[in-house]
Image (spheres, rainbow, N blue to C red):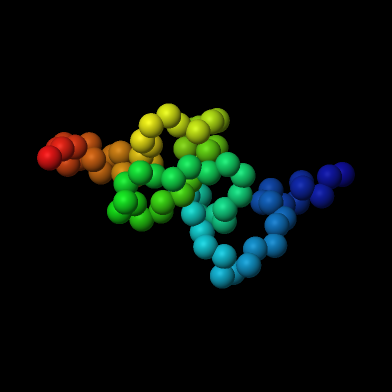
Length: 77
């Protein structure tokens, strides 16, 4: 019987002081993309968590910042 049957979470040992990123609030791992909003509260996201399989072309904004821009009407100066 596989050990993972009793625990569906990944058995990695995390440093409690290591910064957390992404909408999943996990540490940095694998391919990540940075939100181009300088005021983004999260900043870095795992590709899989935001539906990416490769680096985006041009500017990329996370789902949270994209929604905030839509609410503000994304007015550009």
